[in-house]
Length: 229
Length: 365
Image (cartoon, rainbow over all chains, first blue to last red; front, side, top):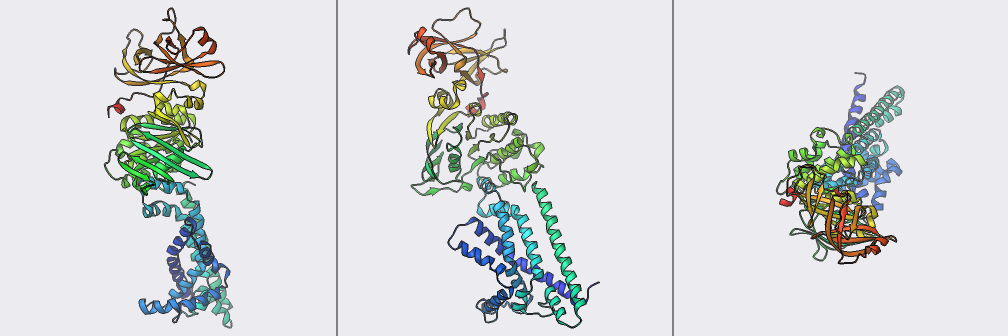
């Protein structure tokens, strides 16, 4: 292979963290996007703002907040560890959580745009054919949402691959557990004579990012053709 | 019977309608655009909740504001054909049809095969919805609605988005739906020619209220309807009965009221019901038994009313025994013939339009 053991380790870890991150955030993002588009309730603006906070906060601050909440003595972290035996801090699941929070607004945004474009009339038609709320969501809304869902997931995945600040603050920089590509790149730059290693990692990140974008474009085109738009 | 008595405020628009429709039958909600027809069907379908009132289909209360009953649309078993078809773009034609069939509850009275042959859907089954023409889309939408095995079918201007040729192409399908399935239908339209061909009953709406309602025969004489459809479309609609065929000239004898009309029609069995329209402008009135005339069709009767039509002409209602016809003549003719209610009159019919077709199957049920 072209990659050194530590490079391929960072690559595998990055992919694993990004996959988990998308898996964590996708269901929540669908729910939040649906609530924000379809429901009118008190606190809607507040929810909208909170969801978008990671876009405007320094990633380090997000990592710090996560540390406070999900750390071993944090409100949620201590409960998770005690009751479910889940440890987030210094683990790849923790890294996935941090990237999930950071990429959450991107995902919600993509799904929301897609939801707003769905013809509500189709859901009405499904109603008159005897489809209840869940049935309608699963058989009409969700399939029509698929392009937006995938666009959101791919964007979030790519963003998750590149997340640095929140990850290093929350779960530190542990080789083989939380040292993803950007963290490995940073570490390489810290070492004397690490420029070459850093450059290789940068190129690797570039290839990954390009691949993600191309994949997303290819998929969007395919879906458009199926739906005839 | 479908009983509707509902009120709904939508911004500045107020809907307040009340009508009872016999079932089975095809009731047309007829009126100018924006008079509340679509709002009314949405309330019947359950897609929109009325502020007050009741909607009852046969013995099922679908909506009752006072008793706080509001059956969800998905439980009403009311089929809905939307103006814009609303086919699911992620499913094929077959997928759309199965979607309805899978969710149908209760007695299944239409099968996929029956719908496919009734609406000629066989060749379309594997198409995607965006590969269909406007008329094909509506046929699929109608088929899909039928396969949900509805107790009532609502059609909201299903032909409005089609051009004239497509409309003509689709109308026969709707007629066979009416004649072969005997499913009660509420048909929304602002085009009188569609109503004439399909409806058995008309609810005439204007700015949120019902101004008149009744069977199509009685409604064809209604003055509110006259004012909406314009003078050239005014004329009595009569369901005649085929008596037989004249072998000498190949004309079909049709009984209307006490009289008999001789018409050019396709071969029809005696006893078949035939809807004819006698336009007021195509009728000549005589106070004597007409002789030496080329007009073959004349109906004897009595003048029952004389209404002012516009500045120059009158509309004369003539009772021809169990049926009324309308004739438009000039005011000076009314004076010269000394027409008044009770006068004997002969109506000479210059032209007869055949509207709608045999209703045999429909009437037998």
